[in-house]
Length: 420
Image (tube, rainbow, N blue to C red):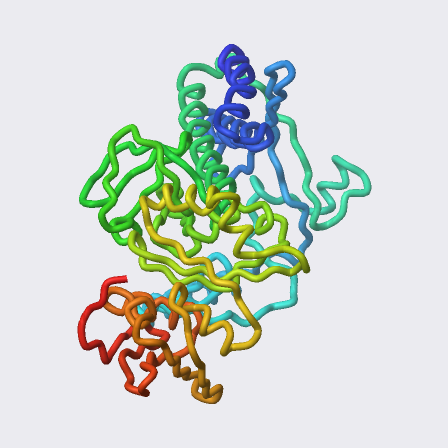
């Protein structure tokens, strides 16, 4: 077993570096595994056995732990009989208490707190687990009720193959659990960020990406319509959900989420990353067109110009990442009328009338600007309504209502689809 322990010790650094599992968790797993193996071969059923592995020399020591109690902490025969009677009643009524003292009713799925008892927890005396305080003081002077008394155990010379196999199996299980915990902790901190991975496979419309230590899924509903993903291709996506399950950590990605667009701008535009320019709102129809409203917190900084970049280099980088999706950058304004007028860009607006109580706006547009204001199939005015959170009515100079869009994206009144 000593040889096996030295092998485990040599593997500590590799596990820590390659799998991101802390050395402390690995040692804890080894201690638990060795204690379980020792108890199985040499211990008794009710004993509490602990193991302490020294990674410096590969040595291990074992000990039995007993709780120090007094007479007031021992259950009487009457109390034991009453507990048995209550258990029978609980089984008959279909309810029981879990390990946390919570009442659980079978079939209901509901829980309610059990009555708290401030008196010390009583136990049925077991000489393998408890020791009376008077006896404990004969072994260790000054020991008090509630403390633990430690009894060293002999390290068996024939602590052999069966024990080693048991320890190895438990260690592997514990290391897997620690690795799953490590993966969850790592990616939970990155939730809401953009990550990149290599397309591993495509199954049932879902795309699976290799992130190195774990595989993430890009569900069909979170993909951009029209995009095709090839095995071995590296793509970027938003990590929008990290979920812990009994079988491990599930990572869900998105390329259609509005926040994906926001994070791309944070990466490409230093003014946004530094907090000088703020993204106020986003309206997106993935793969087709998006509108983003930005605001400068510093005088002298043009928010739209910062996002566009010199000769459009910044926004074009984002457009290329989105596969050609058009992106309109709008300057946000505290004045609703100004913001709404700018939201239907590139169309020019002649007049804006707003009703703040109902959040409705009427925009008057020249005849030659109507197609731009409405967009193909009403897309431009629909995105403008989503971006601003207002209902927008488009009217011609003559006062005729041509189109109307709500915050929910519903468009009505189109005489015909007009190409942007």
